Length: 477
Image (cartoon, rainbow, N blue to C red; front, top):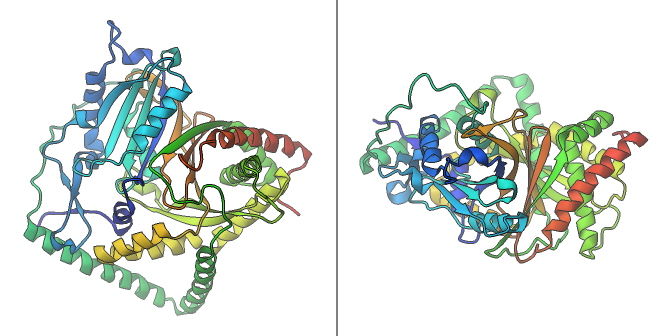
């Protein structure tokens, strides 16, 4: 029987959650030098760009595959080769209206990212954007969350870009691609049954391995049960209301912020913290400033419950597809008035959360999706999007710290895009590249028209926190 490329339960969940006003793709905005993208007549080299990208798609095979559903929905969908694949459907070019400033670019990003991907095609798009100030070229990327997560997305982007402006030509040309015929309904039904039976077997083997350690099994089981109970109890309680925890509409607001990575590392060293701790502390201070700007009460002790994705991808899973992401819940201390106090509280919380194994427990819960029938996953998805258990999400992805190039044009800066979802109209993505942290803020267009205030507050808070390190900022009492 042919080998089928199944969606995992976690990947299928992103398909089930998607709605017309809630696209479930991730993406980003990249800014490049412009000159290498143009020929001697001043025309954008779109066909050359498409050819260069197509020549590397054998390194990311799912980028030429589309969804194929199993008869009677007996299992999750499978990826199959698209026999009509055309790179022109995925790599496009648009020109901004004059004067090509941030407002024009932001409007384009908001429009493109608010539109769901066509499920009849492979689930990705690249939009090259001309007409930027200083002759630069932007790249707006969108890839469905069922195809990649943030970490694998960075790895895939690295594959498609170059480490040198003029890289050595490949020793061998890209292999010819011949799409494989899709499996028959009989093969899909039989494969789906095998997949359903294999999942419980692997899970039971894991349980059996644990029970072969009687000296630790009972203790581990009790500790896990206690920690899981606490996490579920906390997640089930509604967080404090905010201006963005409302039903979302069809429009989006997108803003970016820039923070020097060197400044974050200074604070990290002075506080004995991690880079992620410092980022969360910066976000806490910026969110406090934003709430005050909105006239909200921010009393001592107020927190914002924040979902922080955690990659469970091992080093040998780089350049792989699908989602290997779990998450943790953090209570951002926006009620603390001082930057040092906010950082101390974030460090304390994150240390406790990591020690509890919350991310691993959540991963075990998500793994049940591989065993559940699609109808049950769909029901769970609908319940998830209707619950209001978090105020926002903040994701931090470490990117390459060396320059990257496309068609000889240097990548100058990059910002992530993370889509909002029902009742959670604010998400913040962070990526590091060549000494800069690029913050990409996505908000519901109706409830967050002043998202720029939060973007500027992030940059200001980073400076405040850096200045505070000279006064003995630390994680102690």
